[in-house]
Image (cartoon, rainbow, N blue to C red):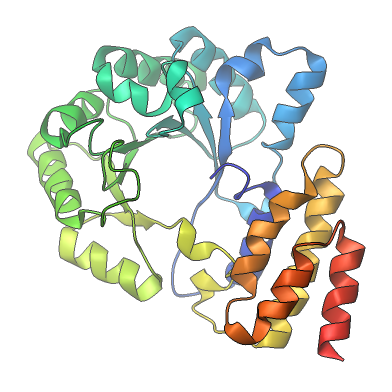
Length: 305
């Protein structure tokens, strides 16, 4: 997720959940423009590469790219592979208007031929050395899973991650998990080994396991559920003291990695999630006015004393 699953947050998640014996999980980067990686001048490329920084603790880690140009994807995927990533994911589901204007993201659902060309270009780039997956939706303006998914499966990607809504639906309706079950059936009919990963409205690990059991999905992708809860995959309920301490740690790490590159205000969406509950409303309000990690730390120290 853009401006959410950056390297600071991924590190924090990995640190507090990697010891989990409950689940095995894979981390994904924010999506990055393949065109930008290939064509941007040195200064612009450096900024893009900040979104592709990672620590060993985050492995296995997958780089997510977007484009509508196969030739750019082939070059970018080769470059990303050389950075040491464990896989590449092609975004074919983002509903952002600017991404769609480029013919990328969810716009590719309307052009299966181009989508397949991009998958093939990615495979040429990585030469079978790392897996290629696809993140997509049930359809564009309508549910077209029965025609869209088989187009992707023809190119035999290692996994297809399906957000169980259309682009038009965004997140305005409940995710249709019965359609993930149908996706599994479609995959099984092809006798291919492509993994089907479900996505949408997954609340926690127990919910994820239940959805896998009910649909036959090979796995689940969690997004919003991880906000403010890096302990999610460890299935651990932190104390308020622990939440406050990790919030400060997260804030300092974000500033260390992105000072002068990303706005500090990006961290504030995390503050709301770390500090849920009416008893923390005043602290949340004060933190929204903080300008740096030092101010955050002082506010939290004063709150705890």
